Length: 124
Image 1 (cartoon, one colour):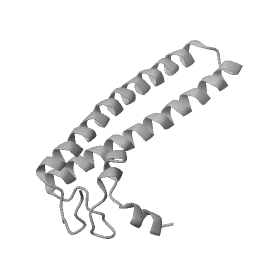
Image 2: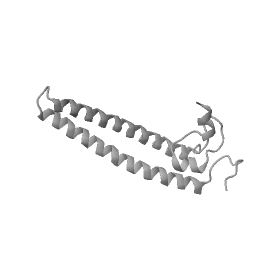
Image 3: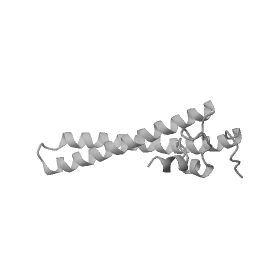
């Protein structure tokens, strides 16, 4: 049971979060590698087709979507890496707005978050 007076998560609790983050990092890095390879394939296909072709437009659109997905994956990886840094420096799980502990349920679902649900809802 969580104690609302608790200021930080214990080393054991932080290990659980670190494992979740490392698992998500591994999956995200694999996804980013796949996206980068797909973008390279699109580049190669683009170079093989003739200019002005209808396929070029579809290929460009697909390449743009892949680039957007890759950018999102890269941002997610950066967010997860920053979360690992917060674990190391002892600030992980503390809401940057309220200074209170973020619920374990929220951290399990969104391990890179820096805001409690209360703070997030108040930002709207």
